[in-house]
Length: 351
Ligand code: ADP
Ligand code: MG
Image (cartoon, rainbow, N blue to C red; front, side, top):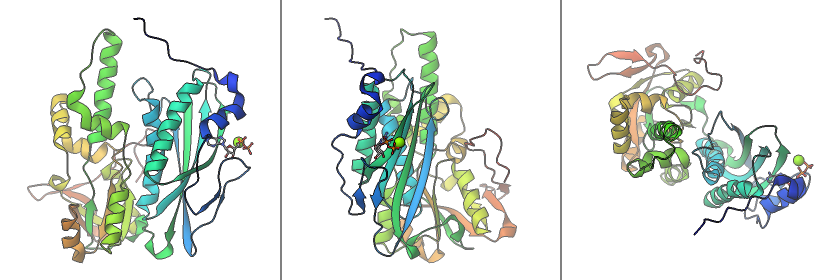
């Protein structure tokens, strides 16, 4: 039986307003802070009484941040929302709204954008945020997506990067390097398919690392767990650009140094085996890979038992600024940590 071709409605058939209507159809506002969503010149929000408003934006461009030859549109939509709410959680806030702006070329159909919005809506539901607006424009080439997330937090709950104190524990949720290795697998398979279009790929043994790249999760659970334990980090951020780069950010913002023990950095078993298969150093992937969307935070030394009990790993200690930001190797020698993670302009970070 011949496969039926998927329906592809050209964007021009609906026009801008028809498209916006189609994409935002049936969206319900669930947050008490959302007074008005899609459909007017502005969304109208009311912050919970006495709380501060947190706002964050990320821009995702085709060919720079994602490759549609192996990233399904629904995963992309989900990820675009997840990475933004991750930034709100990283401030110890609670995300409540997002706006989504898209630039789309004629290469995309209405059905393609519905796929993208399927993922966006799924993430909104998962993280309990309302989609309250956005903008839609034609583009000459490719797809671009910009998501803005809005969240709230009591003033005293907000965790800045600048709050780390000497002798704090440096803690991390989850494990590192998996998303980066997932990306390496996808890039490798893309090359295989280019040279051998008839090849069939078996990706079963890569499920975890692929998922970590394609569908990252914001660590809402960890933030809630810390809150329930009555533990407020002195400094916190999410790990998007690579663990080493983020450690440096916290240390610079706080005016402190750090001693990090690389063997304590959690790395998943599958990440280790993919690294071995590809001849890559797992620690390099873990420190510099990026896109882990885990949380890096510091807490006072006295919180050691609490974080241990939560299954959160301590990878080092905050030190005086004179100590520098160093990795302590197994023989006790100290090597300066440098940022070699993702950098939007390709150069090394100046810091
Ligand atoms: P304006 O001309 O005032 O910018 P638009 O016609 O662009 O308004 O948008 C109409 C409504 O639809 C607004 O509420 C806007 O926030 C919402 N909107 C537009 N594009 C999107 C989108 N891609 N996703 C979600 N909401 C959108
Ligand atoms: Mg507009």
